[in-house]
Image (cartoon, rainbow, N blue to C red; front, side, top):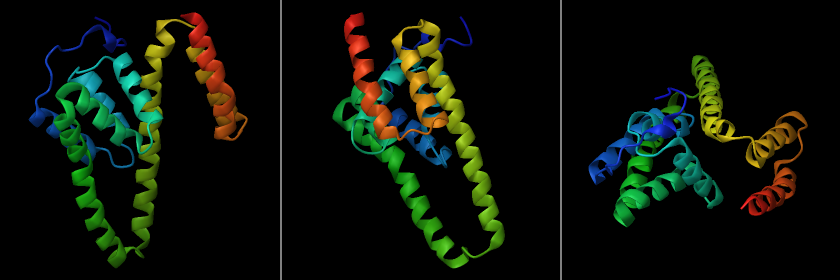
Length: 189
C-alpha cells in the first residue's frame, strides 16, 4: 500500500450518528482559519470513510451549491452516510462549537481589541491558515494529477495560472474555462 495513494483503502463501515457528530465537532474546533484541511485529514487519512477521489467529488458538489463549501460538504457527507438525520448531525457538529466560540471571542475582542499584541497574534494565525489551505489544495490535487494527464489537470493549471499569475478576474476565468472543461469531459465519454 502506497503512502501517497490513500485511494487504495477505505473502510466499509459507516459512521454512526455519534461518530459523525464527534468527527465534525473535532473538525470545527480544530479548524481555526479554515477547517477543510482538518476535514480531509479526518475523513480520508484517519478514518478512511472516503477515498481521496470520493472526497474531491463530494467537495466539488459542495462548492457548486450555494453557501459555505465545508458546511455544504458536512450536509452532503452526513446525508450520504446517515440520511437526513446524518446531514443535520454533521451540520450541528460543524457549526455549533464555532458559533459559541465566536460569540465569546467577539465579546472579548470588544473589551480587549485595542491591545497591540493581539493584532500580531491574529496575523500569525492568518499565515498558518494560509499554509494549511495551500497544503490541502496540494493533497486534493494529487489524485487528479496521478491518475493520468487528461483535460482535468490541464484545466486546473490553466485556472491557477490565469488567476494567480496573470491576475485575471476569477468570474471571467470561470466563464471561459468551465464550458471548455465540460465539453472536454463530455467528448471523453
